[in-house]
Amino acid sequence: MAGLTPAQRQQYDEQGYVVFRQLLAPEELQPLIDDISAEVDQRAREYYAKGLIKSLHAEHGFETRLAKLWAECEAIHQHWVGGRHAGPGLFGLLTHPKLLDIAESIVGPEVHCEGRHRLRPKLPHWDEVTVPWHDDTSFGGRRIIYFREPYGSDARDPHYRATAVSRVLPMTQPPEPGFWLPLVEANEANGCLRLLPGGHRHAPPSASAWAPEKVVTELDGLQTVSLPMQVGDVLLFHQHLPHHSPFNGSDHIRWSVDIRYQDGRQRVKSAREPGFLARSKERPEDVVTTFEGYRRIRDAVREFMEQTGLRL
Ligand SMILES: O=C(O)CCC(=O)C(=O)O
Image 1 (cartoon, protein in one colour):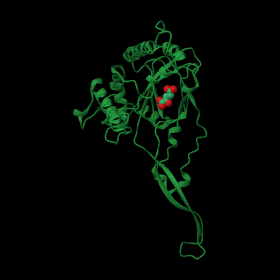
Image 2: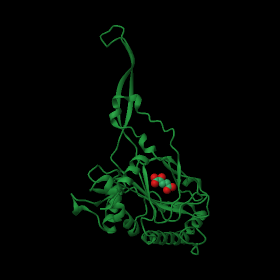
Image 3: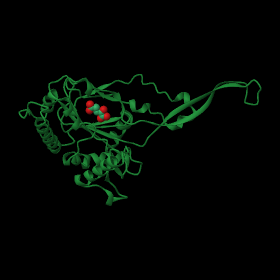
């Protein structure tokens, strides 16, 4: 297993991210680009047949066609957002040995690929695909009670007065490394990612529970960085690293994909969007090795929700 070098691990722990320049050959991303392009073509034909668009815009390629279709009918954009797209090209990336090696060096040998992968067709000149500052995982919480400004020595003192304070302290969560891969060159004009290196360390450890005044970390001194990337570059980032992507002011779509992994022994993050065991020493027989296998898991969950009306 190649995974992270000690220097990369240190950078990940301290800065919250590592950029691997040209980790993948651009040809390795082509199957995903081809799958997306085929689906764009298929949807265009469906929308055309229904009279929702007047042109197939077939003369346009990967970087512009969906934008032209969207300009005629905004609804067409929905097919590639929210983890809806999954195909053999995407599965090839989710199970790419180089990504799994890196994920394994953070989550351990049981590597679960989360179903919360996202394609991002970041359309030009559309505010709705500007992503505000955020991180990718919410904190668990633990409530503590303590007393502020006690007057008197203790509760047996008749003059004893104190204000009870109830506070929820964030708890650290199991690691969930994320990867972000551009499918076209990402630059400042088309809304490449911006990061706040070190911002992930704001997450206070649960050990602070008995020193609640210490749970606020000053983020003073942290500087944002803008991260232009070429096709084949891969960003690894910590689940609590603050990041955002600004307006795409270019004339083309900034396509990208982001992927998350977790320790396969922990409770899965989202049953509604099922992932799969991608690598395992303990349960090798449960590892999903084909897109067909992953598709069956997705279909089974979707059918269950449709039949029961339950949202997992
Ligand atoms: O690709 C983008 O524009 C935003 C990506 C993002 O927010 C994420 O990967 O969590």
